[in-house]
Image 1 (tube, each protein chain N blue to C red):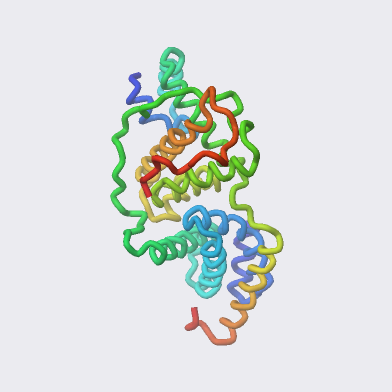
Image 2 (cartoon, one colour):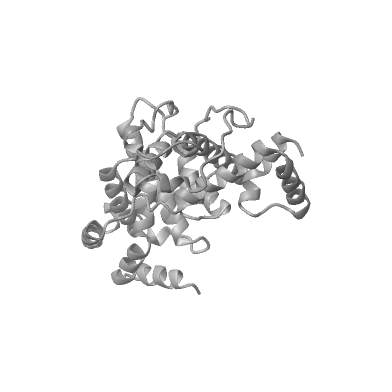
Length: 85
Length: 208
């Protein structure tokens, strides 16, 4: 496997959906190609950092305020009939 | 029958407490997606309200073969993109735009990262870095990344929610991941230390 082929398969590899044969070829490539190993490892970390970041959590007070506003508008919509959204 | 579908059917029959339960179940996700796309807190709040209201008003049209959440995400993404268009009318904002990027060659700079790079920064600094870094991606890339990698939708669900093909989702996901990795490198690579607040996380990220 060449570096460009590794890159083509990277997303499938990280998502765990590579077939066995390609996975072995890719891991073999990673065992000797340091650059691709670093790209693979740091891309994986990028995903994990974003996944664990709790970026843009909805605070409880805002959450209740939004939910109450949504339900009030839904009630108004129901009273006015289906043409109002 | 799934619990979600039971709630949806009750809501369709006019049971508002069932609809409220659906709001409770997905409001955090919709807010996160909306803020990732709009990069604006007030817009994200509006998107949450408008998306749920639209879902409520169009519940009768919801086809029960697909998941309610995927349908809701599609509505929310469209509302969020509309907000972006209003905010940046000089630019076309669409998931279908032909996103110009470098070809699929290996990233130019390949420096290894510290073992636990996120620990070099305080929580607040890290959030700022991550927020500014993802903001630098084109909306079409960051939307795919958020749905797949942050919200955990499958490739097929992401494709359905964004009305894109599976290969288009995969291609955008790869590029989004590589661009984020590349941009985070300057904060996380070996030899860097904390103090993210004094850094300009958007320098060089002129891809918006």
